[in-house]
Length: 463
Image (cartoon, rainbow, N blue to C red; front, side, top):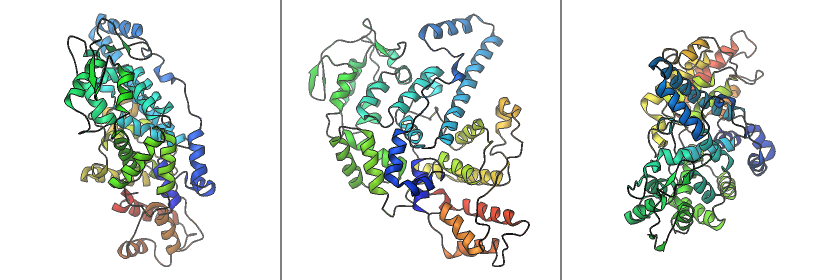
């Protein structure tokens, strides 16, 4: 596989940025990615959703006072907003000239998990997502503080139920286990005392706030330090711990490059992360520029986003409904805003179960034939049915129409596969024979059959 295409897939969701990386060089491409502008506006799809505690209470009272049919319609309207928000984000991923910020937002989205199903307030989920986007390349400690004090997080991890006389340890535990230090680097007493420090951190207007009548002002001992600590002070103490950089550097390496990064790399980049005071931008720059020259293609199974957006880019698909893409991702186990649990998507081999592989091959057949990627959505979402998912798509494949069978095979292989063998070459030459005429009628169809064969190989599933 062409190295620039490989890194376009790693730093985004398709091969669309391959030429830009080649022309600019990786370092300049990263600078452009870090400085690229992004949308800071609240999307219009949230116009009718509650945005303040007052509006939320009023909507709940309205639902409570309504008859069952009207209440059901109001709940259905908010569910539609959830689906629209998924499509809104997918469009950002597709349209971004420099998609690294969205790729990193998705990384943080799977690190600081919050879901529609548990939070239930769409505006808070959007706020959470926007905090991740705004701080995607910022400081890890600062981001942790902001996320812990978001309404979405205190709702998702039950800190609304954490009170001085009735302690709930969920947020305290996940802050240490999943968000910062990892298992084995804290004690149960740290969890218990941390929960006391977080008691009373409850829902606010723009962010969570401490409620004086609910908070616990006991003196606590936290990682060997004693005092009356609250969220910010606790996070400062966590970031003084020896093991703090390694959980996140391992996860970043897994997200972008290696399903199984070596412990040596995790420690090497983690030590650097501590040295730059947990600034994310220099860490990413160091990882990407130092891993780029290495021969490391084939080290990671593509997640569903990369798989399907790469196909769309190769086939120049423009009019595919983003709601259908969101539904397809859900089928593949990558439901945006709705991970199965607080641990998030595990990735790795779980992205290539037999069921996922079959679904990917079905999607390949449908797209190569100009059809939408999911038929089942027609039965599960009337909005999708109204938008006519059976409508044919315009698809076209870019290939050198002055080449011969071997040069065309090599061209596609260079874009699509990290490796190939003699048997695969023979199969492809049986599709595109030695006397292939690129000017003949039906040449596009023959190359499309070759493309479809290549993208069904196990090698295409890996990057």
